[in-house]
Length: 328
Image (cartoon, rainbow, N blue to C red; front, side):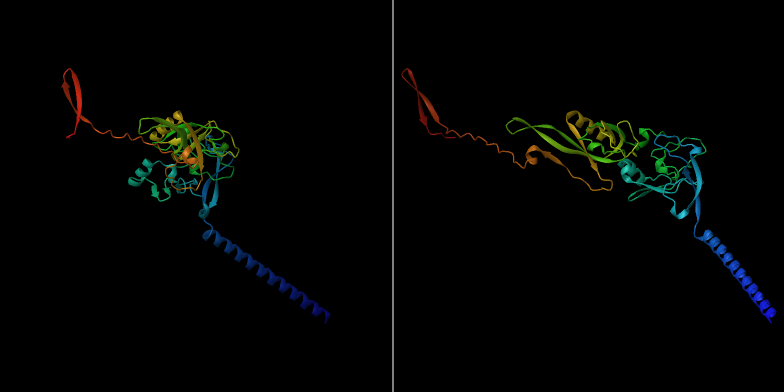
């Protein structure tokens, strides 16, 4: 009896173990099938270029400095260079373009460039390493493991100097600043500033008299900075007191800034990164600053003299004037 009971117990344990084995195999096969289904349907990837080391402004982009990794297609940043097919379409803000370029793009869009309300959409970009072998240079710091973006490198064959930051029709102009007029060293390349002029203005009164007064006037708004002193590298977090700042301006603006700098003192006011408000005419003199009114000039009115009419008559050897009523 005991032998039969032992055999039944052993057989039961064996059947239970076999059932657990079959169930575990079924669960594992289900997990594998589910993972394959998720990989083929929900997580599509693309091959993108990322940096293998930190690269700073002006560095030449070499093939050894990048590698290809798989990145989820739905999470690829705009402007990322793909191993095949240039870069993912990205947007460039309108404030980085001069008015002539904006008008040109609206009337005759370039291939792969589509004007938008908030900028322009770029859909066609050369491969990171084009067949022609033209070199690219770094415009902004790229950290190790960061995807290579079109906005952080130059176009093929383009130098990373100050000229690469000038849009068509724009010119570089240097403005002398100090700790006060240069916003205490908080300016960075890429910032926008308003330019104020302070100087003495001469005026002439109604009587031909000459007077002069000190005036501060806003002469340019939203001017883009492209370099601080001799550096166009804007990723540093340290504050430095600049002696000069270089701005991107149209030729007419350059002439106005040159005239203003030679006849008075220029001061800069930093504009917020998201500020798109329009600023009207701004002019302040000493009287308006203190809330005073200019004294009225009293006009001296000469009294009209009464007209006297006379006739001359000779009486003997003497000439006599006799008053008579005026007829005119």
